[in-house]
Image 1 (cartoon, rainbow, N blue to C red):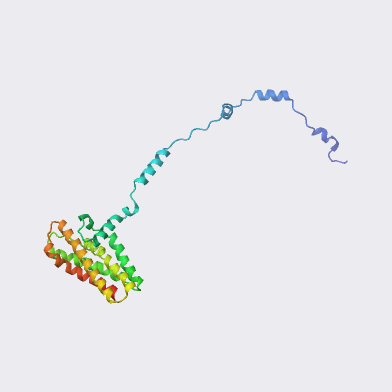
Image 2 (image 1 turned 135 degrees about the vertical axis):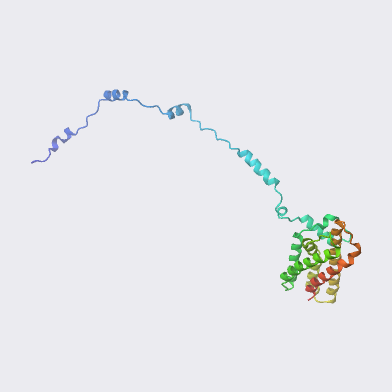
Length: 242
């Protein structure tokens, strides 16, 4: 009513008039569509490209071969377990070993110095600093003394003396362990004398063999070379006796 819109004719004005399908097909014929490549792929079957070989098999083979050819970790660190056992046997051997048994290294001496300190620690003595200090000072003194006695051409440096001293400390380790079993008795003093003489003999034999390898005859000076080693190992034996 009034001036409002006439709702009665609203359906007629907004009625949906379907479009002529013939006209739609005719309009669609005038449009140009670009064919997609996916249609051909769908018709012929899509095949993904083959993966590119970047030499993965060769890389794996090379990696496995390189790991297999690498030396053991101990060998890379310069630790030869076989050589350490060979030189340790030479300390307790009565007969002279080959020249290769007396090649210098510090792997074995470090092990035996730590072993001697640990043996004293079992008895309640913390002597690591004292043992290491004596080893360094004694090696320097023995190197100077031996070269003075032998003369030019001896060339027995601190490195060689430290190696000899370290390996010859093995009897002192047994003496320190014997203290735990025997205690401060007369038997321990007898064992101390035996260990001192054994270490002195082994160290003197090592030095003579090294000098003989340099074509320096020192058989007549063996006693003179043995005396400073005797004093050295007597000091280490006192650590076990007191």
